[in-house]
Length: 313
Image 1 (cartoon, rainbow, N blue to C red):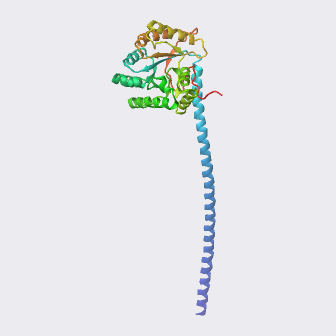
Image 2: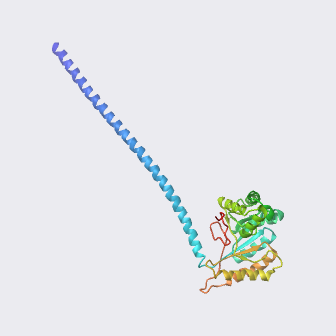
Image 3: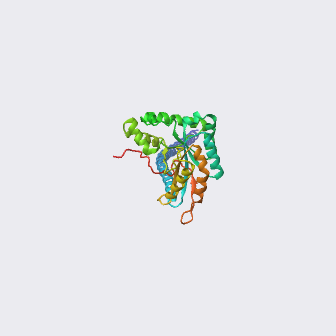
């Protein structure tokens, strides 16, 4: 009996020792695994921070790449204007029934135009004018902003007065077409606009405030370099044609062989337009190049006069 008790005690001690040893090993393994887990978590946190920093760098580089690519496209386009004769047909002060005739002529000739619209003209000329605005967009021409009321004493008396007028025509064109133009021609052009601002607001600072705000809003201000003088019936159809063609030929002698032709939404203009287009297509440079027809666009060719964004020191 004594021997049996000793055996039981020995077995108990053995089991207890084995269990204790096993528990120690388990505790050690758990501790090791917890240490590993903490190390992995720390590494993951470090990797996450590194990934975040790399992503931020990638975003910056991608943004810079996009800006450089956009600049490259612009520079290539500008370089092309030095060797490729290019004409831009632009029409101010519409829309009206005349606009429909102009659009018909452009479409028949297979060329596009740029239309700087006056809001009050659209309203005063009713459904015919609204339909013309829609046609400009639907038929792939450039719809652009001129003003709402073409009244210099009103729009150039202050920055606030200009943008009250400007916002009104923007809202009208958006309501009609569902789109918002992004290029602007100041009434009478930038050179005269500066003079009018001085006359009606008392300072040319108003001009710089207006143009700076336009660019801050994402618009581009575009003038012209050929005036057909079609704004008055005194000019006549023949002279309108002559002004356009002689001006275009002169532009071929300049660094940038670009003809930005100013025309208006008049009867004499649409009467002169077919011959203007025909003669422009027939002009050739000494190396056999002919005019290509383009529309003005934001980020595209900006004619001189230049809209100065900030006042010179």
